[in-house]
Image (cartoon, rainbow, N blue to C red; front, side):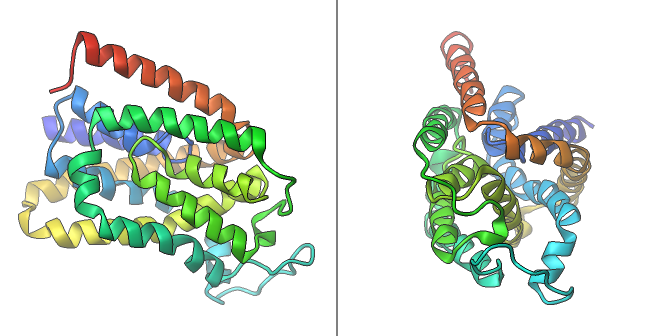
Length: 272
């Protein structure tokens, strides 16, 4: 029963933070260390249940996903740029998938710690502030106006999110803004490209770890998956609108405060 409560707690944290540029993985790692949920099983669990939250995006963008695969009529693109298609998605997801696969052992063994999360929170916050202050004039007001070059820049920025604490949405939205895409366009595209990235990451983790998982582990994973999906589904509409409109600077301030709290916790309490 204790394990089920852990799955519920971590699932709620994931569902609430996945769509905000504050690093859901970082929050789960910090919470896991505070409640004694660590190790290989915890690392795999934290990756797998993110897919539950990401599926909430499928519910929100179901018509866009169907259009990408030619299962719904395409709409006329705004402006003169190319309408977003599967090539944009492929360009954007390839860099992070490639680097993530090559460095997968290093990432899980070295970067899944409170100390690295603290660093990621601070550096990610600084990167987001730079994007807000230094971005060029926006040439893409919505994601249908994104160019292939902008999609590539967003994809390269997504590599930063492999460092827990940096945040996938924070890195890609900031990267999109620096490439000339509006905050709303970058946010929409960020949530859309998260679908194939998390399907790939989750599938790989399950295949690699399946032999070591017990029937109890599968129930544990299923509870966290379902909880993260339900919480994310309830939060996704308001959170996506919030991220589209609110300056990244405010989220950076939150990250700095959280990093300060984590540092004090390390000094006075310490992580196991």
